[in-house]
Image (cartoon, rainbow, N blue to C red; front, side):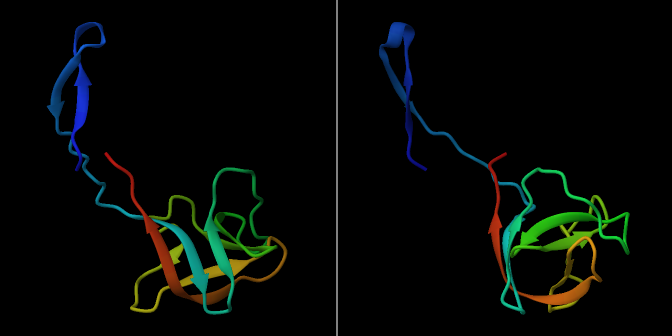
Length: 113
């Protein structure tokens, strides 16, 4: 990591200090590509309804013009079923049935602690 200059009193130049930035161990999925060709983006706020057949589910990703990745609130995996080697998600809109679709790729992001 590149050193940053620390200013002394009244803006006088100070000595160089090295800053280390730790990373969280938990990565968040920023985006998903699904087996049906849809691209999904991580939900960033907003008010979404719940699917009629699963009123206790919440949306985690927006996919295409209408589809949403759904799962129970506080899902530790953000709605992605990672229990097998091939990850899957439940997608659908608020009025129709939910469908299990495979995840082909996932983009990860992490933030500094």
